[in-house]
Image (cartoon, rainbow, N blue to C red; front, side, top):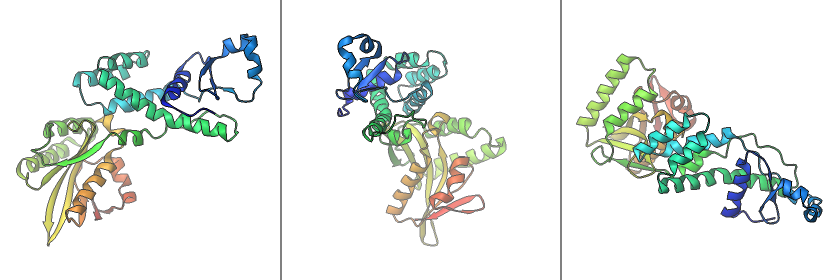
Amino acid sequence: MFQLTDAILERIIFAMEDQSKKFLIDLETGDLIDKTALENDDTSKPYLEIPQRFVEPPSWDSHRGFSILEAFAATVTSPASLKIELNAALRRGKGVFRQFRQVLSKDQELFMRYQEFKLAAMRPIVERWLETLQEGEMLMALKEEPDDLRDIIASDIGFMISGPDEIAFELESYIDCCIEESFGSLPIAIKRRSLSDLFKEVRTDKNSLFVAFGTIDGTSPLIAGLFLLQTYRGSLMAVVHGVFATKESAMLDLEWPLIECISDYCARIGATQILLEGPFFSSLLCDNALEHGFFRSGTVFYRVL
């Protein structure tokens, strides 16, 4: 059986995405074989009798393909104009794949990053398919989603912690945008009061306030969290006042990696506890807090570091 090189992987992906379903994979060479040509070529017919020499590519469908487009688009923060166009392409419906690629073709660097992202997302599926064949089992359609896209995305994302005056993005504008998108169900009075208190801390407590954020390009945030370092009875604690992401970034599930980044940082500098306090945490994060070692007291979650 062939070794799965990037070139062979690209061929197999091409066969997976080909809607005519006319290609088989030659397991000895990794080449694509046209079914019709093979069946009509008398000199090739003996090869058809070799068990599993030519096999169907792994099962694939447009739903899984769209999930890769959607996940990649969520990681794009700049250029802003292309980000808007990519999101518009995703809402297009018919012709979404062609339109998405046309937008990407306007920026060669972004297009190459998408190609790498797509290969990384689909490689585990092809590898499992090969393992199934090597084990001599019958090839079955893979019903699960592409191997965890979040793990693939996470490999490209760095988490950083900075003071509010050291970040390259406009913090209050970013928070405003995220709150409108992700916390729209909050009662307006609670949202306004909590937001006013939060911005007051941003403006007045800059020596003890920190911003943690996840980013691909080192500047534009995919997610951000605000926390204060406070001393209480001689012990240093970190109080996180919110985790903010737009709806499209929320699908990347970066909330807990961000919380763990804050926890690790605070533990290194001697903090003994971390608290999650305030209304600006998603319901999913709150639901999973106990599984991540937090305890709950009223509306506050806390964990010993």
